[in-house]
Length: 155
Image 1 (cartoon, rainbow, N blue to C red):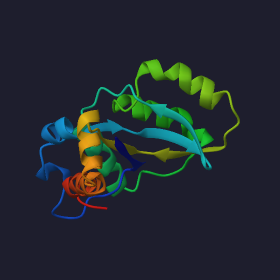
Image 2 (tube, rainbow, N blue to C red):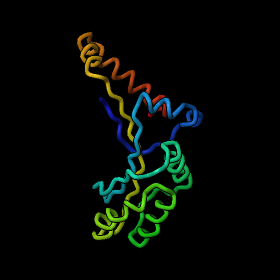
Image 3 (tube, rainbow, N blue to C red):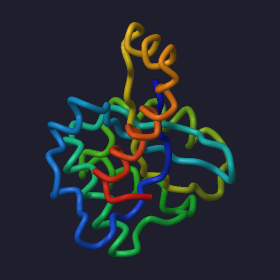
C-alpha cells in the first residue's frame, strides 16, 4: 500500500480535475480529505465529517486559493472562520466540541489552514508477492504513482 499525503496543490491549466472521472479514479485509488488546522509546525485537528463530495471539496479549496483566502487566521477571527467552514459544509456541528477542546481552550494566537487530500492504492497480498518475486514490484509501484499524479495534473 502507498499513500500520498500532502497539501492541496493547484492543477496545471488544461489538467483540471474535471478532465478525469473522480468516481472511476476513486475505484482504483482511495481518495480522502486531509483538511486540518495547525499551529506553527504542529497539526492540531483533522476534520473528517464533511458531507461534501470529493469533487466539491476540491472545488471549494481551489476557489479559496484563487481568491487568496487560504491563509493563517488570527484568534479574533477563529469564531467567524469556523462558522464559515460549517456554513460551507467543510466541518459539521459535531466538530464543535473538538474545536472547543483542541482550539478555543488553548491560547493559540493564530492557526494555519491546511487543506489537502490523500491518494491511496493497495495491492492484494498475492499480487504483491508475485510482483516482488518477479522483481517487478518497484516498477509497478512507480507506474501506480505516476498514474495517480498524472490523473490529478502532475506534481
